[in-house]
Image (cartoon, rainbow, N blue to C red; front, side, top):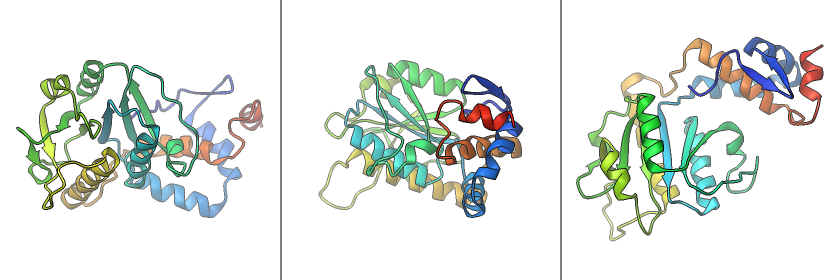
Length: 234
């Protein structure tokens, strides 16, 4: 879970989960609150696609959109060049706002860090890999996807815990990274739901924290200078 429960800083002011909720909930309509609560209930950070060598920002944002739509909270990017995301757009559908985006400078750094957090790491490969159905997706899993031309790096294959591939019945031998990510993550969510009864698995405390973070992002003026400070000091 990527958010600290009582360590928020907005506009230079430290605040708690309860403080954020108290400040922002009155600013949001009942309909949006109901939608927010439903989204938080089905959120999980146990799955994470990680993009390696994907430099087309349109593809990155498309992956972000499908990932968020499936209730997956994080997306990783391995890139030594900075990535600039807009808060909304036709490709992302505004999904960036609701996604925890992580970036690493190297494949080794990314895999080392996510393994330390308890993730199993899989790469998308055909040789030596297993079909989606081989894996139990209730195990926290990060899946590294490469670009359509080169695939994932040899380093990623060497450091990963295994490989996974999408079984295909046609002549097509490769898929666009956003399509591949959508298919893998959709299968993973369905597998988790079948085994657990639900994809979402946050603790009550984590739900409260995520709800507060999303409440802040629902308020249109939350990035304006001084606005949060005024709300929190009322």
